Length: 402
Image (tube, rainbow, N blue to C red; front, side, top):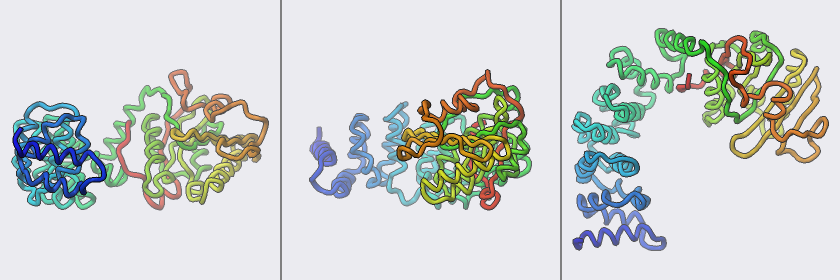
């Protein structure tokens, strides 16, 4: 090992211990060794990768060519990911140096070149015309890289994407449509795309069988097959027929999305399952309530109100993270059963519960969404529909599994 190599190794060792010099200071000194340090770093085994994450932003254009050469070695797994990450972090003010790599014969190098534009809004906007053709690249990883790079342009790139949607190579167009859906949602794409999406959903719905749902959140069940009555009772509008899988995906995405009001803008109303219609999604009244107790009371009040119309209405809750489960069974305007395992002892209503989870109660009294399958009797089509919050703010954007 050369004297420089020994000192580089000593600097890396400093990064792996606490209590020494500032890591920023050590990394800056490491970058002073330029290409030699880069080649040393790239040769380290993956299990030492933790010391490297903050190093690359201290290197400049001198580090680019060694990384590109490394990408031509048919790297896989962590080695490949590390080099791609490193390229994106390089301190290269003039990002035009990445342009030649977008036309390189090796796909991994093209992907690396795209990292030079990712997560840099102004750069993505400046070089969007050079990035766009790679959405039609033969290599899927390159196409994904181009998608991420263009997406870095934010909403300012919207007009460019909308125009390119009609003139780009055929292979690129689905990516552009997906980008538009993420940015502006279904109502924001043009009529031709809306019609194509509806046709695709209708085709996928033919012969679709129910499947087990991942449950995290709350839902209501009412004993009716009259979907119009359900929509009216829940104050929902603008129903769009969807597949069962798409409806479930929308609910899970909305519930786990932290954007403001995304969990209360729309609801998934299922087809009738064994005579029961299930409604997934928070009502604005419940979602806008303040505190857990007020939220729970709003959901129970909703079940009581619905039970006066449908004879009974069940509210169920489950969490995929912390073990929470709850249910409220309302009949003819009264709460017949209530249980919440996060509430204080004595808060339950009705006979002592033998059930330990809402899915057990749902299986006993209505329909357990986790147990949907080919045996489930299905009537009608499910829909996504807007709540009052959705009518005011618009439906959530994004691409969903059909």
